[in-house]
Length: 237
Image (cartoon, rainbow, N blue to C red; front, side):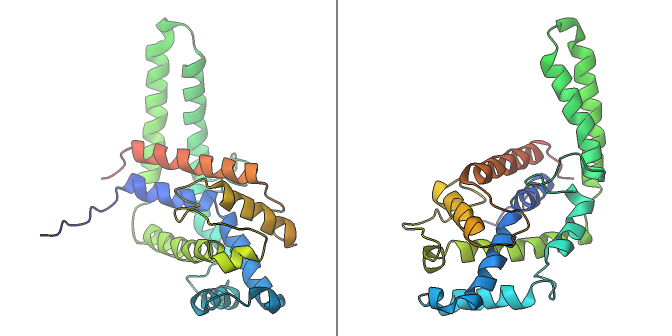
């Protein structure tokens, strides 16, 4: 008898949304490739029909269909959840998420830096109180609206990453070999990071500019740490 799939906890759900938002440049990069697909047809002769269809869909529907939100729409969708992307933002905007997160970070830093054991109980209580407020803010996001946002963000991200990992596509930008199938959400494959650097160097007018290998791997580590923290909050209700 087959086992039933275990539904992800709310913490895992938020963690995955956070990962994709931190790595949102993947969507912009894939969209730039979709535009290049039409601009330089001679470079994409080896692309299979299924990937060609994805490239065409991403180019034609971007910003016009619900599951293809462009950057302004993605920012509008994600502002109530996480504010600016931690992959590209300041980490200190006036969104609810970052406003509630800052006191948690400050309290945690004070606890870590305090060398006097007599102060531990007070500092521990402060961290706990700030976490309660932060967790409450996050739990209040549950519902149909967040689920729709998650579906839309996941749809376009999945199309984007599948385009970038297609060998005939990444060969256009001078990448040989292969990219880990779990990249970029579950792997920091340096080949994938190198692809990001090459595309953002070769294609102009990308909103985030050139993203080096080191920069992208750093974003992936931020995304993974954020995911783990959300899971550890055990916010399933």
